Length: 116
Image (cartoon, rainbow, N blue to C red; front, side, top):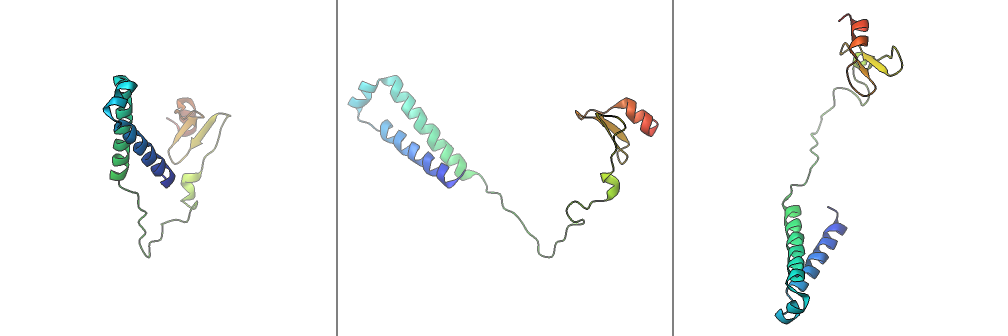
């Protein structure tokens, strides 16, 4: 959650708590249903703020001297080879399988291209 979101949430919680802490006479003019709604909103706002504060923040860990095995985009070229025997079908020799554009295995072209 961004800082602006936290400030907005804190402001909403403060306003809801101020309304919930109204004198009893004023609460009677609001009615018990309205008072329950205001109290519920205040509880949700406070609960959301507590839950956000309890979440661990993601940290990027960098090890000195680490070098990835391949430069970006430079993986073993065998795994990048793909061809399309017909429109809508792509075959991958590394997997020995052919797929439709939707991602499902195309058994007919797998059998034709790889013999099973």
